[in-house]
Amino acid sequence: MRQELGINLLVYKEKLDQGTAQSTLLKAIKDQGISLAEVRREYIKEASEFQAIAKEVSQNDMTLYYSVPEKIVEDKVPNKNLTTYLEEAKKMNIQNVKFNIGSLNEIDQAGAEELKDILSKYEMTYTIENDQTDENGTFACTKETLEQIRKYELPIGYTMDLGNWYWQKEDPEKSFKELKDQITIFHLKNIAFENEKPKTVMLEDGLIPWKKMIEVLGDKVKVLIEYPMDEEKIADQIETVKEAK
Image (cartoon, rainbow, N blue to C red; front, side, top):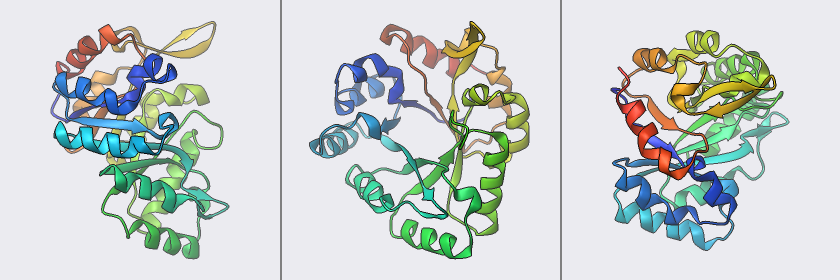
Protein backbone atom coordinates (compact mmCIF):
# COMPACT_ATOMS: atom_id res chain seq x y z
CA MET A 1 0.00 0.00 0.00
CA ARG A 2 1.12 3.57 -0.68
CA GLN A 3 -0.68 5.28 2.19
CA GLU A 4 0.63 5.67 5.73
CA LEU A 5 -0.69 2.96 8.03
CA GLY A 6 -1.80 3.59 11.61
CA ILE A 7 -3.37 1.72 14.53
CA ASN A 8 -6.46 2.69 16.49
CA LEU A 9 -6.11 1.49 20.09
CA LEU A 10 -9.36 -0.48 19.71
CA VAL A 11 -7.15 -3.34 18.51
CA TYR A 12 -6.26 -3.78 22.21
CA LYS A 13 -9.90 -3.76 23.35
CA GLU A 14 -9.48 -6.72 25.69
CA LYS A 15 -6.65 -5.01 27.54
CA LEU A 16 -8.45 -1.66 27.56
CA ASP A 17 -11.57 -3.26 29.04
CA GLN A 18 -9.36 -4.70 31.76
CA GLY A 19 -8.11 -1.22 32.64
CA THR A 20 -4.80 -1.06 30.80
CA ALA A 21 -3.81 2.56 30.15
CA GLN A 22 -3.44 3.52 26.50
CA SER A 23 -0.17 5.28 27.27
CA THR A 24 1.40 1.91 28.09
CA LEU A 25 0.47 0.47 24.69
CA LEU A 26 1.91 3.11 22.38
CA LYS A 27 5.47 1.73 22.43
CA ALA A 28 4.13 -1.68 21.40
CA ILE A 29 2.61 -0.02 18.34
CA LYS A 30 5.89 1.73 17.50
CA ASP A 31 7.73 -1.56 17.95
CA GLN A 32 5.53 -2.97 15.17
CA GLY A 33 6.96 -0.31 12.85
CA ILE A 34 3.88 1.93 13.07
CA SER A 35 4.30 5.62 13.96
CA LEU A 36 0.64 6.69 13.73
CA ALA A 37 -1.80 5.82 16.52
CA GLU A 38 -5.32 6.90 17.49
CA VAL A 39 -6.26 6.97 21.18
CA ARG A 40 -9.85 6.74 22.35
CA ARG A 41 -11.40 9.16 24.80
CA GLU A 42 -13.78 6.61 26.34
CA TYR A 43 -10.78 4.69 27.70
CA ILE A 44 -9.06 7.66 29.34
CA LYS A 45 -10.09 7.35 32.98
CA GLU A 46 -7.61 9.66 34.73
CA ALA A 47 -6.54 13.22 33.90
CA SER A 48 -2.92 12.18 34.40
CA GLU A 49 -3.25 9.92 31.36
CA PHE A 50 -3.17 12.94 29.03
CA GLN A 51 0.37 13.79 30.13
CA ALA A 52 1.41 10.12 30.11
CA ILE A 53 0.21 9.73 26.54
CA ALA A 54 1.98 12.92 25.45
CA LYS A 55 5.22 11.69 27.02
CA GLU A 56 5.07 8.32 25.25
CA VAL A 57 4.29 9.94 21.91
CA SER A 58 7.27 12.26 22.26
CA GLN A 59 9.67 9.54 23.39
CA ASN A 60 8.65 7.22 20.56
CA ASP A 61 8.46 9.94 17.88
CA MET A 62 4.84 9.17 16.96
CA THR A 63 1.90 10.99 15.40
CA LEU A 64 -1.27 10.83 17.49
CA TYR A 65 -4.97 11.10 16.61
CA TYR A 66 -7.86 11.37 19.10
CA SER A 67 -11.20 9.57 18.75
CA VAL A 68 -13.92 11.45 20.65
CA PRO A 69 -17.28 9.62 20.61
CA GLU A 70 -19.22 12.85 21.08
CA LYS A 71 -21.22 15.02 18.70
CA ILE A 72 -19.35 17.93 17.17
CA VAL A 73 -22.68 19.75 16.79
CA GLU A 74 -25.84 19.48 18.91
CA ASP A 75 -29.11 21.24 18.08
CA LYS A 76 -27.36 22.93 15.15
CA VAL A 77 -24.72 24.65 17.33
CA PRO A 78 -21.27 23.50 18.47
CA ASN A 79 -21.28 20.98 21.31
CA LYS A 80 -21.04 22.96 24.56
CA ASN A 81 -18.13 20.73 25.62
CA LEU A 82 -16.22 21.05 22.34
CA THR A 83 -13.51 23.28 23.82
CA THR A 84 -12.98 20.77 26.64
CA TYR A 85 -12.32 18.00 24.13
CA LEU A 86 -9.95 20.19 22.13
CA GLU A 87 -8.04 21.22 25.23
CA GLU A 88 -7.59 17.54 26.04
CA ALA A 89 -6.28 16.99 22.55
CA LYS A 90 -3.88 19.91 22.92
CA LYS A 91 -2.40 18.35 26.09
CA MET A 92 -1.55 15.22 24.11
CA ASN A 93 -0.16 17.05 21.05
CA ILE A 94 -2.90 15.54 18.92
CA GLN A 95 -2.82 16.14 15.17
CA ASN A 96 -6.39 15.09 14.32
CA VAL A 97 -9.59 14.83 16.37
CA LYS A 98 -12.49 12.70 15.16
CA PHE A 99 -16.07 13.41 16.27
CA ASN A 100 -19.57 12.05 15.71
CA ILE A 101 -21.68 14.05 13.28
CA GLY A 102 -24.54 15.05 15.59
CA SER A 103 -26.64 17.65 13.76
CA LEU A 104 -23.80 19.03 11.64
CA ASN A 105 -25.84 18.06 8.59
CA GLU A 106 -28.44 20.64 9.69
CA ILE A 107 -26.12 23.48 10.68
CA ASP A 108 -26.90 27.02 9.50
CA GLN A 109 -24.63 29.98 8.76
CA ALA A 110 -24.53 31.24 12.35
CA GLY A 111 -23.75 27.82 13.76
CA ALA A 112 -21.11 27.23 11.11
CA GLU A 113 -19.36 30.50 11.88
CA GLU A 114 -19.34 29.72 15.60
CA LEU A 115 -17.93 26.25 14.92
CA LYS A 116 -15.29 27.63 12.58
CA ASP A 117 -14.22 30.16 15.20
CA ILE A 118 -13.75 27.48 17.88
CA LEU A 119 -11.82 25.13 15.60
CA SER A 120 -9.55 27.90 14.34
CA LYS A 121 -8.10 28.38 17.82
CA TYR A 122 -6.28 25.03 17.71
CA GLU A 123 -3.44 23.80 15.54
CA MET A 124 -4.89 20.45 14.58
CA THR A 125 -7.18 18.95 11.97
CA TYR A 126 -10.68 17.55 12.44
CA THR A 127 -12.85 14.83 10.94
CA ILE A 128 -16.35 13.45 11.30
CA GLU A 129 -17.18 9.75 10.95
CA ASN A 130 -20.06 7.58 9.85
CA ASP A 131 -20.70 5.52 13.00
CA GLN A 132 -23.03 2.59 13.69
CA THR A 133 -26.03 4.64 14.86
CA ASP A 134 -29.27 5.54 13.10
CA GLU A 135 -28.50 9.19 13.73
CA ASN A 136 -24.96 9.39 12.38
CA GLY A 137 -24.41 6.21 10.41
CA THR A 138 -26.52 6.37 7.28
CA PHE A 139 -25.22 7.23 3.84
CA ALA A 140 -27.76 10.04 3.49
CA CYS A 141 -26.71 11.71 6.75
CA THR A 142 -23.02 11.39 5.90
CA LYS A 143 -23.48 12.81 2.41
CA GLU A 144 -25.59 15.71 3.70
CA THR A 145 -22.96 16.48 6.33
CA LEU A 146 -20.14 16.57 3.81
CA GLU A 147 -22.23 18.88 1.64
CA GLN A 148 -22.69 21.26 4.59
CA ILE A 149 -18.96 21.18 5.28
CA ARG A 150 -18.29 22.25 1.70
CA LYS A 151 -21.07 24.83 1.69
CA TYR A 152 -19.78 26.65 4.75
CA GLU A 153 -16.09 25.92 4.04
CA LEU A 154 -15.61 24.25 7.41
CA PRO A 155 -12.11 22.90 8.17
CA ILE A 156 -13.38 19.36 8.68
CA GLY A 157 -12.36 16.21 6.85
CA TYR A 158 -13.96 12.80 6.69
CA THR A 159 -13.05 9.55 8.43
CA MET A 160 -14.77 6.76 6.53
CA ASP A 161 -15.34 3.71 8.69
CA LEU A 162 -15.56 0.91 6.18
CA GLY A 163 -17.35 -1.64 8.34
CA ASN A 164 -19.89 0.59 10.05
CA TRP A 165 -22.12 0.75 6.96
CA TYR A 166 -23.38 -2.78 7.64
CA TRP A 167 -24.90 -1.75 10.97
CA GLN A 168 -27.17 0.57 9.00
CA LYS A 169 -27.81 -2.00 6.25
CA GLU A 170 -25.92 0.23 3.85
CA ASP A 171 -23.68 -0.93 1.00
CA PRO A 172 -20.01 -0.16 1.83
CA GLU A 173 -18.93 -0.48 -1.80
CA LYS A 174 -21.56 1.98 -3.02
CA SER A 175 -20.81 4.38 -0.16
CA PHE A 176 -17.09 4.20 -0.87
CA LYS A 177 -17.60 4.85 -4.57
CA GLU A 178 -19.77 7.91 -3.85
CA LEU A 179 -17.61 9.43 -1.10
CA LYS A 180 -14.05 8.27 -1.81
CA ASP A 181 -12.82 11.65 -3.03
CA GLN A 182 -13.72 13.24 0.30
CA ILE A 183 -12.01 10.68 2.54
CA THR A 184 -9.07 12.01 4.57
CA ILE A 185 -8.79 9.10 7.04
CA PHE A 186 -9.85 5.51 6.35
CA HIS A 187 -10.81 3.24 9.26
CA LEU A 188 -10.16 -0.23 7.96
CA LYS A 189 -12.04 -3.31 9.12
CA ASN A 190 -13.86 -6.23 7.54
CA ILE A 191 -17.25 -7.73 8.32
CA ALA A 192 -18.90 -11.14 8.28
CA PHE A 193 -22.38 -12.12 9.42
CA GLU A 194 -23.28 -14.38 12.33
CA ASN A 195 -26.98 -15.15 12.89
CA GLU A 196 -27.72 -12.42 10.34
CA LYS A 197 -25.87 -9.82 12.44
CA PRO A 198 -22.64 -8.09 11.36
CA LYS A 199 -19.44 -8.61 13.30
CA THR A 200 -15.85 -7.59 12.74
CA VAL A 201 -13.44 -10.29 11.58
CA MET A 202 -9.86 -10.51 10.42
CA LEU A 203 -9.34 -8.69 7.13
CA GLU A 204 -8.96 -11.82 5.02
CA ASP A 205 -12.15 -13.39 6.44
CA GLY A 206 -14.74 -10.73 5.62
CA LEU A 207 -17.04 -9.68 2.80
CA ILE A 208 -15.65 -6.26 1.86
CA PRO A 209 -13.14 -6.02 -1.04
CA TRP A 210 -11.00 -3.56 0.94
CA LYS A 211 -7.84 -4.08 -1.10
CA LYS A 212 -9.51 -2.67 -4.22
CA MET A 213 -10.58 0.35 -2.18
CA ILE A 214 -7.11 1.08 -0.86
CA GLU A 215 -5.84 0.94 -4.46
CA VAL A 216 -7.90 3.99 -5.42
CA LEU A 217 -7.51 6.02 -2.23
CA GLY A 218 -5.33 9.09 -2.47
CA ASP A 219 -1.72 8.86 -1.29
CA LYS A 220 -2.35 11.38 1.51
CA VAL A 221 -5.22 9.40 3.07
CA LYS A 222 -4.22 7.77 6.36
CA VAL A 223 -5.35 4.16 6.77
CA LEU A 224 -5.95 3.00 10.34
CA ILE A 225 -6.65 -0.57 11.44
CA GLU A 226 -9.60 -0.34 13.85
CA TYR A 227 -11.16 -3.54 15.20
CA PRO A 228 -10.58 -5.70 18.28
CA MET A 229 -8.34 -8.72 17.90
CA ASP A 230 -6.15 -11.09 19.85
CA GLU A 231 -2.86 -9.36 20.50
CA GLU A 232 -0.84 -12.06 18.77
CA LYS A 233 -2.70 -11.36 15.50
CA ILE A 234 -1.78 -7.67 15.30
CA ALA A 235 1.54 -8.17 13.50
CA ASP A 236 -0.10 -10.43 10.91
CA GLN A 237 -2.89 -7.94 10.21
CA ILE A 238 -0.36 -5.15 9.80
CA GLU A 239 1.52 -7.20 7.23
CA THR A 240 -1.72 -8.10 5.45
CA VAL A 241 -2.46 -4.41 4.93
CA LYS A 242 1.10 -3.46 4.01
CA GLU A 243 1.20 -6.15 1.35
CA ALA A 244 -2.03 -4.94 -0.27
CA LYS A 245 -1.42 -3.79 -3.84
